[in-house]
Image (tube, rainbow, N blue to C red; front, side):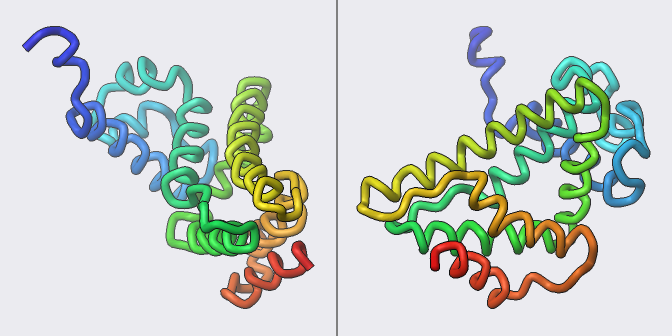
Length: 189
């Protein structure tokens, strides 16, 4: 086995370490909130050395951002149903399931907490938000090519995502399928 084969092992130790560290972060955020733990505690819970976490992510804030973005991309990917309404309904329903699920509130709180974690946290938060907005905009940019209305990511955030986030963060009511569909329908109406 040559050096390149040794370093590329999808599903190998690297993937297992990444998954264990991500799960440790999610569990710790759920138990203690943001800022209630250290890299050492994450590493211990994941069964890896501190140096492994620092080598791969560089800082706790970078790790937290990676966990958040990875979860969002894996659990709420940008759909392509063939029309704008279908894309938005599918995406909003997926986000609603994710943020109201067992670990969703912890990840949502983590995202909010990154906003107040100093210059590094702000830089990482901005990077995270820019990437998510870019992904959403790529979904929205397909609509005009199909002769449909053009929306920007901020409009979807304001009218669909923000009300869901507020409900979950403040316990202001459940994200029923009817409620989520209604948000999309009002935006498109």
